Image 1 (cartoon, rainbow, N blue to C red):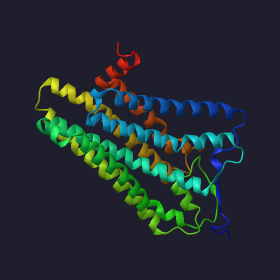
Image 2: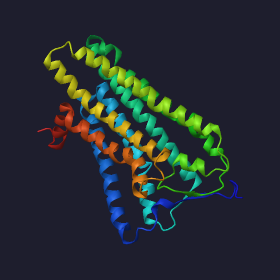
Image 3: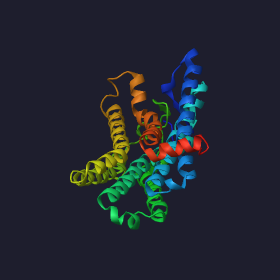
Image 4: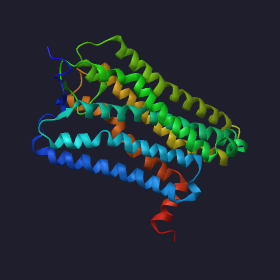
Amino acid sequence: MKNSSEIVSFVLSAYGNVGDLKYLYLTIILFWYVSICVANIVLIVVIHVDRRLHEPMYILLSNLCVNEINASTSLYPLLLSQMYSDSHEVTLPWCYLQMCCLYTSAPAEFWSLAAMAYDRYISICHPLRYNVIMNTERVVFLLILLVWIFSLVSFILSFSFIFGLKFCRNIVENVYCDHQLMIRLSCSVSTQSYISEIFFAIVSIFIPFTLISVSYFKILAVCRKTSIENKQKAVTTCTPQIVSVSNLFVGCIFHSIDFRFLIARVPDEVRIILPMYVLICQPMLTPFLYGFNLPKIRHSFKRLLFKRK
């Protein structure tokens, strides 16, 4: 039986032999990755350049865009290199690095949206205290810092045990290094793996999702008693966040269904794409949702595009 000293790399078997379609897939993946990076960078630049957007809500949005780039970069470069390669082999350190980026960006996404929901709650439910509670310094040096520190700690506490596993097999039936499949390749699967997944789900998804839900329920309760103009303003600013959270929730369901229940009942293509749904859609959805739905960002982009004429 093989031990951990013999396993120095994994083979990503889900790529298979695409033949002449390889270059078509390469072009599509590269185009999508570049589009994601450009869209998010443009939004970050617009917020950075226009001082009128130096408000907590937009600073938090910039942080969310940074996380979209981080999540995409943890996946797409590997897809491109493996699609071009014929061996589809990836070393253990690169697998660990990809896992760290992927499973840090996931809690960062949810906690960033939770911070944005809190910002909207203070703005709508406590408008007179907004400038005191949500000042720029507090957002930049507290909320954003805590989001990233908490996301990294969440990953370390949940999945650091994988770094010490002994692997008896090296064939990963996916297009990227997924922690669940890697655990299955270990020589022994302990209850720690199940506990870590539950812990990660609670800390990284359930708690922030609960905080987001509570924030918007309170916003809804306040909006019912305000004027039509205030209701429209609340809908305009809150809709993108609600859509983002809903899309993330759908992606989490797809990931869970794919790996836990239907792995032997669905076609291979569906089994491969479903877990990547969030990484395919969410990074592009974020800049377009906020860029085209929030009037201040849309007007700032036009001013920047036409040199403020």
